[in-house]
Length: 259
Image 1 (cartoon, rainbow, N blue to C red):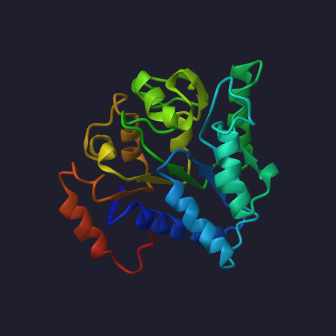
Image 2 (cartoon, one colour; image 1 turned 135 degrees about the horizontal axis):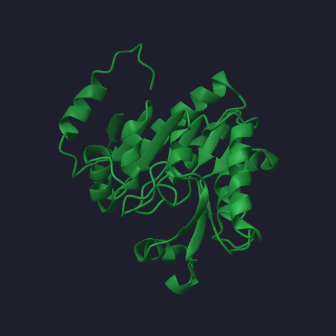
């Protein structure tokens, strides 16, 4: 696992965008795992600028991490809407090649199984973009989630619903259930890139990066991934015990070693 500490969330987004663009240059049909929330926005903004400058991501495919259950796709806070608004349209992706879990399905377990099958049929996710919740969740895998879990329905914690209330008129409108890729599904991706910014994420980042691998902090499972990169700004890095070492390691990284 590589930990990169940057000056700001915007710097982190630009760094992550370099990786995505490099992978797309090697494989135009790169499969992206798409997170929502505030953490990945600087990445999507950096990619938007790159596309405006001539980068081509039109052949890329995508799979969203999660979706609320019972929220219509046209609702502005649904992840169907967010992914379309923040990723598909500004990056020039083909909407037919970007999938989001079906939170309105009559048969939720069948919809979850179909989503797993779609990811496998695409050859798996090449680079999974991740944020992290204040309670250490990735996707909507809340504390106590199985580290081997697959795409399934989950009940959101009170903390997560309050954290996400800013996207709704009130916390009462935040759905209680979601469909999320499981931790096992996330770990199948070829590359993981976790972005975090702000002091509010500092404790969760430290637990994920330096704490024990535990279902109590679902994000800690990324310690077991062969190619995981954690990009955090200075406030989000403020609880890291080995922050100086991470800075030294990145500053002295061999030129031949790929990011």
